[in-house]
Image (tube, rainbow, N blue to C red; front, top):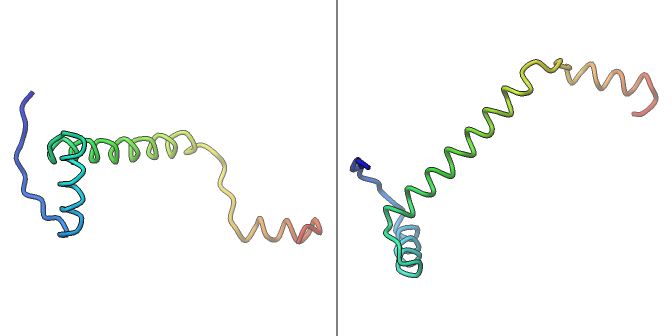
Length: 75
């Protein structure tokens, strides 16, 4: 697998915590950062999939919903 090099600047406290976690888990900082980025991107992909699934759902204006609730006596 080919890798690319990048320079990343961390807050000093965050960097210290990352170094400690790397030592505790016997993994490199690079592995920890790569896993965190993969997880973040996977969450984004999940969010995008949810948006796609709901794209065809009807839209309701908040104002219309509130008026309907008032008209039915629920507000």
